[in-house]
Image 1: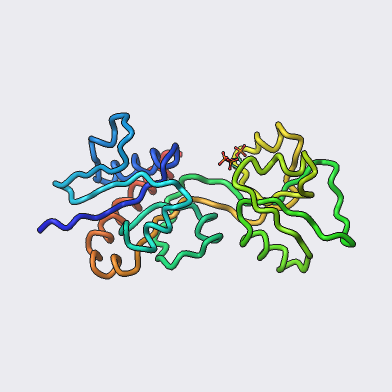
Image 2: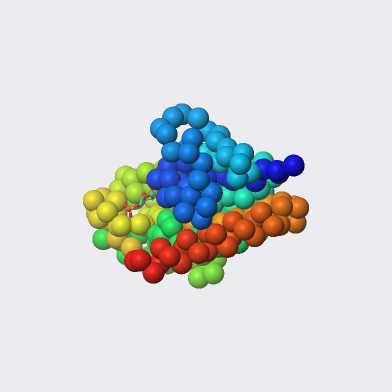
Length: 215
Ligand code: PRP
């Protein structure tokens, strides 16, 4: 029997680039290339099935085994620490995690720092490492608004081009770490579908290498 490999792709522009990489690695699925609202696609001849998943949910699908493998940002892996294997840096979705604030911001160590973020665990860990007392304000998006409206002093957020910060009068005060998309695997799937997953890793590695050489 041709056992299927279930792949969770992050829905959106990153996911489309990730699918292109899978396609170049030999895992095309023509159905997924036509615009539609469907969320699952399979190529039974190749034994592969793709799902479009909200990017921040990919790690949950993989951890629970609903998907065997998937692609998630390093930010999500560091924030949620899912119990999965991280197999490969696929080099897409490059950005960084940073502390940003209005240009006029000055640190006042006598006060608890108010930090708005979608990434409370990352923010807490960073500020604990520098011994700074903080209050976390957990938001779900448009984080840049928080310091503008006085809801927080700083933000801990993703910076890609820097355009959102610039256009809102904010700047980076500290870069915490670089981020890129990672291939992850469910732990049991990695044992039971080892050969299939190994073939995906080597196909993707070769495609990533080619991409880097063409850069
Ligand atoms: C992310 C991030 C920043 C922006 C950074 O937000 O939270 O707001 O992208 O990108 P830039 O440096 O290229 O401007 P996203 O688009 O995911 O939306 P969100 O605000 O709803 O989280």
